[in-house]
Amino acid sequence: MGGVVHFEIPADDRERARKFYQEALDWRIEPVPGMDYSMVITADMDDNGQPVAAGAINGGMMAREGQITHPVITVDVPDINATLKRVEQLGGSVVMPKNEIPGMGYTAYFKDSEGNVMGLWENLPAEGEPRRDT
Image 1 (cartoon, rainbow, N blue to C red):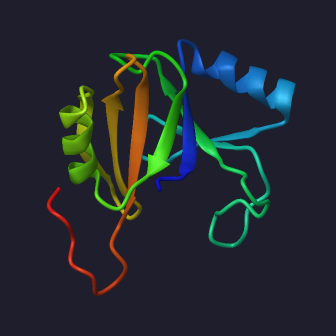
Image 2 (image 1 turned 120 degrees about the horizontal axis):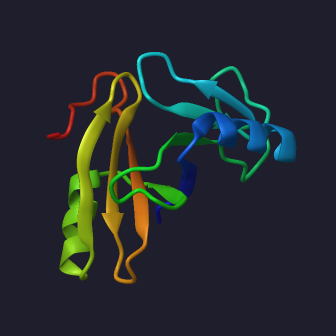
């Protein structure tokens, strides 16, 4: 079962959106160096960057563009390519194929049978494990 591990909020004006969420919900929003992306911190984190409260997740914020025009829920899966294949077999479609986030893992986006865009996340293999085809 894939668990929800992340969310993303697209924004037309990221500075305005950052200010809104900081003031409305006390979230921290921090730019990711080298990426056109910001992390949205909604909960206290441990030394590994994981939320300490059970069930809490953090997210991200990026420019609204392409097919990513509404908030996205991201689900953890063991194999993005296999999941995207199953999505297509079930009538969904790939919005963005598997893409590596260096040092972290892989992401992809798909459209479900109802037209909603959802995200997928696959962790990098543990040290010593072979990488899956990207």
